[in-house]
Image (cartoon, rainbow, N blue to C red; front, side, top):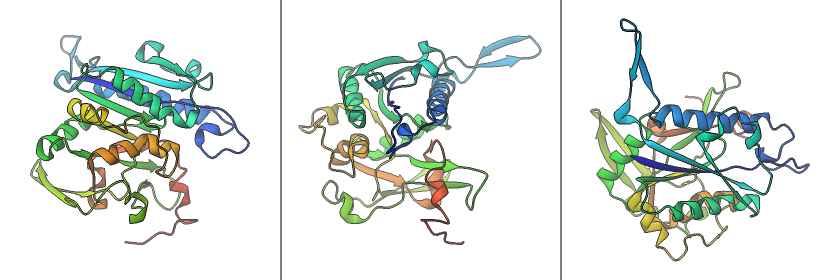
Length: 288
């Protein structure tokens, strides 16, 4: 399988920082991006082996699960940390732009559109997201085989820490219905059910479709690219970052996520503890 992944990456210190990409210390940002890049190649690239101890030889491993992987990192002006990454530069391609940093997600859509017909999956990631599941794309493929290309499965983002009241928290819980009502009708096909490895899976229309990422198969990418609003740079869903990541796909597909009871079925790590640290402070904790 051929996979194209675009990553929106920006860093510039600001005294009025609203995002992690504007904080004083760059260390967390380039650590997150370095881990994201390394993990993508380790999970989905073809350079995987198993050591045969008796023969003292390393043989290919996981080849049916490995793919041709191309990663394009989109940046704004010179506001990036690519020269500090701890991974080799040949693992990605740099796409420099002059757009406003908050609009970089739309430039990723330009890159995806330019490669129509060349890949099996077209993906977008914010630069602080890390996948840990080698069966990630198999699960996505299973979903579209069951539900069809008009339905899109989004992962649940989470943060982790051994400290604090909670060790793991999913950070994109339900929004008020009015927030996404202009863009989606969650009453339509509210629930899908399936079975995988003899385990029932229940998926619900997402009141919060945002995950800072999306993963579209070739048919889905073509469907979206043919919509009149594709790359219209509409920022009316929450803000520019959220709109670039989620508004276009929300208008185009019925978006599903697994319920809290099965949140880990398809998940992606959000680097850091910015949301996790709110529990017990601005966010109350419901005891089980």
